[in-house]
Amino acid sequence: MALSDAAGFWSYTRKDDELEGGRIRRLAEKLRAEFALLTGAELELFVDRDGIEWGDAWRSRIDEALAATTFFIPIITPRYFERRECRHELLTFIGHAKSLGMEELLLPILYVQVSDLIGEGTSTDEAVAIVAATQWVDWRNLRLEEEDSGRYRQAVNRLAARLLEVSERLADRPPSPAPAVVATVGEEDEPGLVDLMAVAEEALPTWQAIIEQFAPVLEQLNEANKEATAQVNESDARGGGFAGRLVVARRLGIALEGPADKLVQLGNSYASELVRIDPGILAMLRALEQDPTQLNDEGITELLNSIQGFAALSRNNAQSTRELSDTYSGIADISRVLRGPVRKIKQGLRGVLDGQSIIDEWDERIKRMRGDA
Image (cartoon, rainbow, N blue to C red):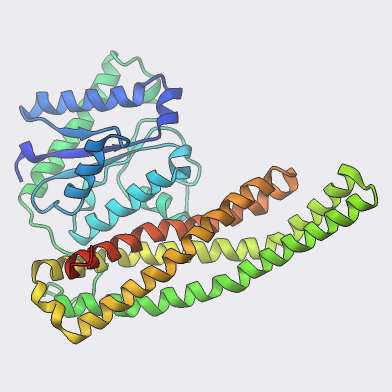
């Protein structure tokens, strides 16, 4: 991998950049310039995700780290973990990087304090946990420096030097599937297609079991909402006014607590399981793409059919999940007593939506292999 092949995706929220007066985008340009100065080679850095270049480059480079060094540089703030597109990019990239044994290509910059990221224990948010497990760069104080100050320039230099160091190290190390993710045949053997298939086959029942637990919890939430609506109508008919509605809101808040806690648990388990298994599935699909003749194997056909069936089922549920999440956003505005349980409900539902982006990619790749895309 030559330095001339190096590229990176600068992942940030536009609102954060606006609040910083454009400093986040300018930091990207300074990093690009410093890398060119140190190496004599250009760092192709994609910054605007709304542009055509970002989308085209993401699709073409996300699974080509074998041929070129592609960094993913998320600018971490509290708002970053609230943006669906940011979470999707992070989860997608780490899956590909792990499947190639190249996690070093993920280089988060901690730009603003994130409470769940710093401290003991592992965050239940799979996106936060991924960042916490990396050697992120601390920019919390540096962002307050003048951009032309010596301290700021030295920090940009260190960041560019780190990109260079990782690029050079990976250039001499061929990528391989991560042993912690996929089963291996023996201590010194690389995993073969059968091993990768076994990982996928074992994972499907786990996901199915988690999905089946969602229905009764969502039914509890639905019943609580119906009961609250009936109580509001009764209160209004009696002339209870806003005081009567507040009483109902408090009751609803109590009724939502139990299922909300359960939904958080299920959502986290669902997303975490997919993040854990994703590298193995991607490695398996890559092996099939490299040797399409194996698609005729009956066992492989059955497994791929199972994955696509699972993808179709989860896709049908995704739209209703988004609508439910939007509904609870409105409910939270009714009274502050509802904000706690609603926040938990949205967190649980977000886990499902995070996982959907991963499953959709599997389905798309299988369709391409089979000529259905």
